[in-house]
Length: 494
Image (cartoon, rainbow, N blue to C red; front, side, top):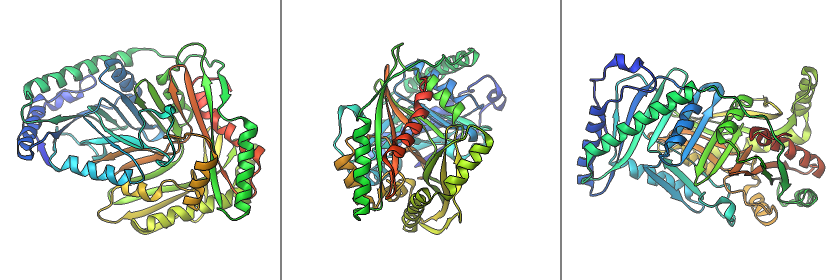
């Protein structure tokens, strides 16, 4: 990988209106260096250029990018931490299939970077907002037969966007990614990029100037994809198999179809509702064709940075209380619930054992904590390790996914039960979704509390951990509680 630095940027211009003074000279230097590398390599190479920005409202950038029509878009944000990635288009994509999809994706990403050229404009930026970053996700189970519901969502997909906005509370940047070949007209490429950035600038300013109000919630027509009584019988059957010793835990998911009779679902409004209601969650959207996979998940699968890997065990659920006193009581009951504590201990043990092959000095918090969201609370245990040399975040996904929190334990026995009995194409629901940078670091969450939206129709997903003393009616009620996240988020009435 070549890295290009140019130090002739007008620093005063960087403080002007959003987004930037765009350094065409550095862009050209990066592109010209990429053509030289392409001639040596005998194939097109990646050119990536990052320019500092003033921080900006990420949803305004998302709406502006959708308006520009430069390609499919994605959105990723942890609202309470003021961290966001918003992208559009595809310089290239890495699509993988089968059980080795994480390994193949890692190999492809390393190969793409071997001859790449990365250019930076001067400015103090953290490493996670500089250079090329891939965003995407993976199916829950690549061995499960696919249905048309998840068309265009392969087993694994990582997109290197043409334009990427990386935002934080104090720092922001825009990155341009392009595959460059030796015969490309570099001047024309630079002119097109500058024109796209200029139009984006205008569109973002227009978005920021608008006064937006969320539309009022409307009734949705909701239909179970599997009848409630049928799903409860699946739970009862799973409990029987657990008591017979087939496995210790299995997570059974269900889905509902929600239809909006007053036009299509508004993706921007859905994201805004989720951001406001779940600031501690990972709020995401990824577009494939005309459809969007959207959600607000509380569960971090793994975060890797500066040689350290952070993950969490999340399992066990209870509703929030209507009053402070009731809420504290429900939290205490969750902390001392034998069923929920047993379910949680299984997840903690599996995650700790998985990290043992990737990390040194794995540290597990001694006691579970309460993670309180707007309508539900969970048991969570933070887990930290020192990543061994030679491993990337994609290697961690290979070891960790699926955790017992979304699959079961033992893993293979639980997955067999899900494949044979669940009667649902999960697709990317409960799979890893997130990003990876040029150093192999990044962040992936488990795509829970999510929906696949297509026009005025949405498919909403929820799952429950089934153990030996699970009750079908209680599990069904818990799944309904989880589904409310996306019912409310998509603008529907409970």
